[in-house]
Image (cartoon, rainbow, N blue to C red; front, top):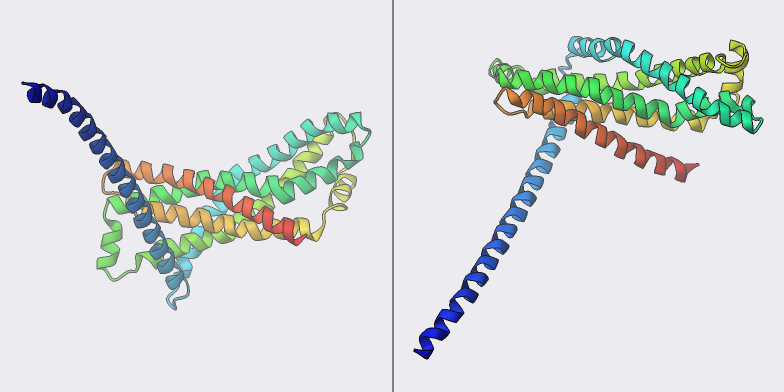
Length: 282
């Protein structure tokens, strides 16, 4: 009878230990699945980038499609980038002018705005806007082609979809986004001049001469270089998410949304790296 009672007392402890073992095994399985998913995704990205690089330097380059994508990515983004650029310069000037007036340094306003726009604000904000517009557009377009099996039809008809769809879009984004950033910088300085004349009176020539008198080559060159990486990241992420979309119709929205989120995050990471490299070189 004593042994039976002791066995009964041990049973709850065994049940608790069994539950703990099951929980630990579930956590281990979950961590293993997360690790496997990460490694699988990383391998897919590496293989995808390798295929894109291989087809980029192939002989049969789709030049007409490349020009069409330059038109779609560059020209059709001009209205949005125009409004963004003017508002950047206008808001920065309106917010900065009262502080400079208090210190009697209002003449430094054009140079401060020009350096801020060219070095950081112009490339960063324009790249994020492009990540939202261009990245989502590429992801949704290729995602819809994946869902409707147009990409599979291209492969069956001996047309290389990577070369025709992906390479042209990545190269177009890499080329057009730096041009859009330079365009936004110019309109930002123009908007700054308009903002300076709201409560002041400065001529167009005087404002621009003061603005560019403090701009150095090392303010301009790193911003241009990193803008090419912004374009490559935005184009590559949009193409990858759209090209690898699922089969359901909801996967088009998922591809577009994830392309925007990931492209914006990678743009910020690239900007941080570029700032650190520039700081070490200067």
